[in-house]
Length: 78
Image: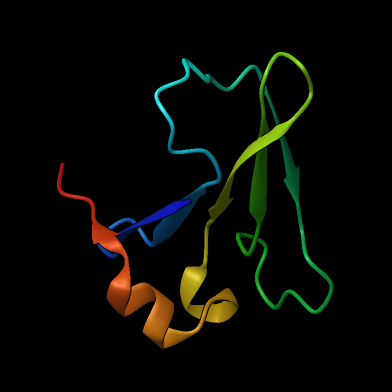
């Protein structure tokens, strides 16, 4: 498992598989969690070809993840 955080964009990505398998996203599903305060407060679930969950993107991570998790995340630099 690996988490990256792009503070400039305001998104964090939790990759559930970190092995060397060629696991690509085939489909995604965007959900609005209960208690969401903003229209852009969404979570995107990424699935592979077999329908397995391979990643989770948090579009407002400051509202969903502990500050300690964001502090420990790899920083994304464009």
